[in-house]
Image (tube, rainbow, N blue to C red):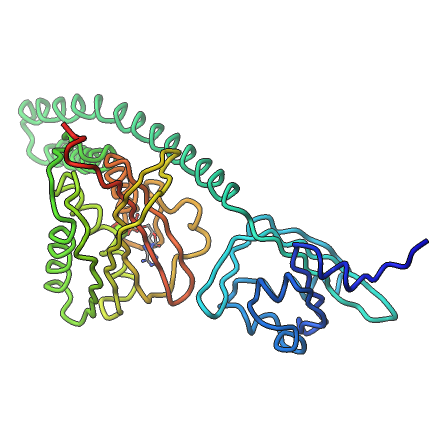
Length: 353
Ligand SMILES: Nc1ncnc2c1ncn2[C@@H]1O[C@H](COP(=O)(O)OP(=O)(O)OP(=O)(O)O)[C@@H](O)[C@H]1O
Ligand SMILES: [Mg+2]
């Protein structure tokens, strides 16, 4: 049997392989790992893997405990964020390995390709649609009898002679109104969008003026691409969508952070399965604490909030508006950086009736 040079073999596979010791220090890295981390073997070996990644991207505790318990585990969709700002979604297989009384952890990291990313996006999209439909259905069902309850309480109030009893009917009316208000917000804007040709920067500037008036300590930086052609949008709705996102950024930075509005033109983007030759990209970036991990996957669902006084409707409304415009919203967030990206197809004037 021919002898195999295992190091050469490892250098020829596309999966990044790292060996870590009990201090999560890198003991070995193959060529694919060098490429993934954009550091040479010499720069990697002897350093903790945490030195190359931001914050708690990798759960070091879990790695250590795998080593101590001689355990294996797999993370299918781990977000890796490197110190230089690059990031990718990866599958990580961690296995315990012992040789010559040396216990190490072997990490096999393979970045998730674009296809998987899109399929995850589609899956989330379908779930969001389903939850929105459910909530809308429920909201309608609540709204109908609510009108009846309120009306009946008012009729009853007129018949009551004793004024102390009127407190009760007033309470019914008051609480019905409160519920009605919530239901209306859950149902979202009920008017049809009025599409007109508008410059997207006019919308951004309106949002910016509003926020800077509200928060005088705010540092709001603009980086606009003036070459973006007019978009076929409902200006009021678009203002609301961008304001909801920007307001979250202001709240996350307690009105004192740094917020950036960036606009660009992107080519050949796929949005919900359809390819568009030209799209406008609007980014709202803040340097706040980042989106809490536990709501990452349900961020756009109605009533998801981490705020004491939040209704959790802001992002859900933004998303329905952007959907009405055939666009999509993407989010990337880690401590110190949250980036919302709105992508809107740029229609050609002659093609829109
Ligand atoms: N820029 C951001 N930084 C950190 N967390 C954010 C950011 N944007 C959104 N979030 C998180 O997403 C949650 C949902 O946001 P959303 O705007 O839908 O609701 P809300 O702000 O809580 O309430 P509402 O907008 O209805 O007043 C927020 O509670 C917050 O935890
Ligand atoms: Mg909000």
